[in-house]
Amino acid sequence: MVILMIIIFCFSHQQAEGSNEKSLPIANGILSIHENITNTSYDGEERVEKLNIINHVVRKLAHFTEYAILAISVAFFLWTWNFKDLRLILLSIIITSIYAVTDEVHQLFIPGRSGEIKDVLIDSLGGIAGALLFYLFTRFFAAIHPKDKNVSTSK
Figure 1 (cartoon, rainbow, N blue to C red):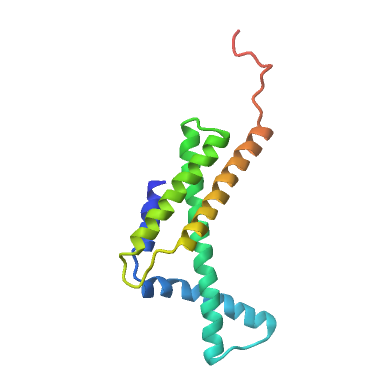
Figure 2: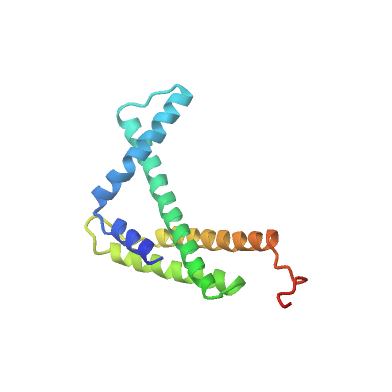
């Protein structure tokens, strides 16, 4: 959990150009796959425009995903401390969302970056998804491995 928070902090600490350059190859790969599948080719300004759109979506999905993973790790930590059900979900979401706010405030101090409320919302939605996934996984696991109450441990 703490390691993920440090990783997120490091990603957020990058200046805008450096951060953008890291996701651009992914966007370029997606656009190339699209061009191959649809047998089209984009050049010049049209290619730049398409790349910018795809890059924006890739970056927002990365926000969502990293906070989903963070929420899963928070939920696991809480679960080991015997938090269950609604308390587990809500506390995981709250912790993840608070970290999202602090991350966006941190970005206010990085050249070329900005703190965006919409990013807090995307991060929080990722946190909600991660907490719910963890909860559903634990419920599913409990359903397929129920504790056998008929077995006596005493002899």
